[in-house]
Length: 142
Image (cartoon, rainbow, N blue to C red):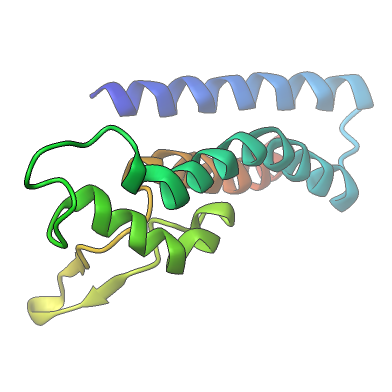
């Protein structure tokens, strides 16, 4: 329920700021404006996210863990860090919730267990909703 609340608040804020800008410009919104909105959000979020992925990918094996189970191959943290070496790009494009999906029996979608920076799925969903919500708001405004 907490994630739903954050997504709702994000949507309300985007809607408020979008409608405020549309009112200020008299309803004029071009593809250039749309691209600038998306790029502004991308360049605001991505540097910090990329830095965290870099730390997770490169340094996680040397940080924090101790005990006999830390450095084994089946440790989730170590294997997830190794997956980040392959799939870091999906996180930086904010499509990380789509990478690794495969269809199995009975038409259900299952995700493979190997993901990079699993807890970053929220940023992918938030960015995807931001991109689609702006287009939807443009249609609703007219």
